[in-house]
Amino acid sequence: MIIKVKVNSNSKVEKIIKLSNNYYKASFSETREKGKANKKLVKLLSDYFNISITKIVIKSGFTNSEKIIELLS
Image (cartoon, rainbow, N blue to C red; front, top):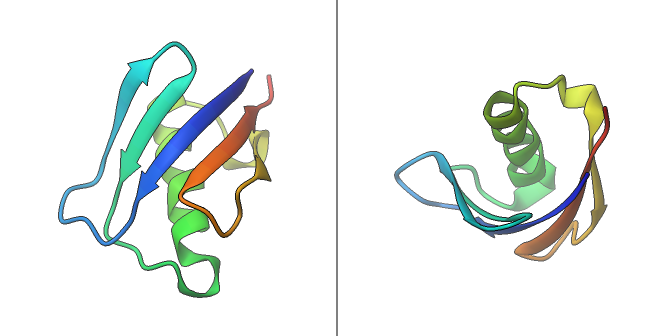
């Protein structure tokens, strides 16, 4: 499954909100430096969808706030 995620890093609250079909907003406290935000996003998505972190692939948007994520089954 392919989803789009809008990332809001440096937030005080960690959460994922479903905005529409296959479009989500993620908020968390990690900064964008050295890929920390991407790692945190993968962890949050893993918990949200109850899948292993190895089944989550960031397809595009590594340095952007809008990301396209593939969830493997």
